[in-house]
Image (cartoon, rainbow, N blue to C red; front, side):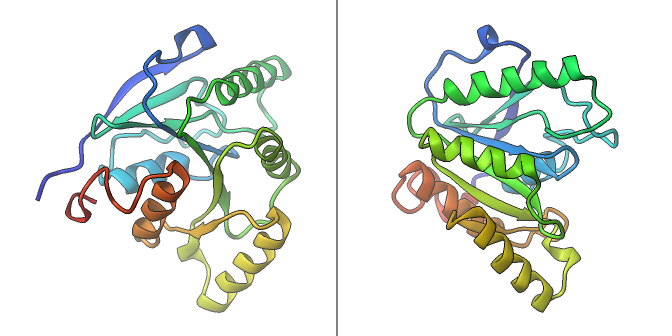
Length: 203
């Protein structure tokens, strides 16, 4: 079995530092401490690739991880951390907005939510922003292992109504739940037939 390769390629703190190649990108957006880095690690099968912090709001740049030399996983700074200064929040908003405006063709966004919490005002604003610009995106309900089967089913139903028909994938970076389903969702969003980037064995 070939091992799925992934490496940190660069970290951008301003639009002029965005990679210039036009490889497909999958951006991970969401509130601080929702588990974006852990999801990246889950998908690539490496526990320490994307480093998460115990301090919400600490990630200041956009981290690009080159996956199998064929696409980028992009970890965006978390939004909505109240203790971050107004100036820093403005800088992050500008950086994230500039990034999303510059997305190359055949790219997608995963909006990561905590399945135990209803979408926040900022989550809904991100949804509206992506829809208005016709970005391809899906919602990932992380930390699904924290709810029982019936509670998770209700959470999926409730959040689906609020998010307005966007594809939703429940996942757990702790147990591995939803990994294969999320890969399939990514291929659909990117317009890739089946598993043509990699064989099933590689995933």
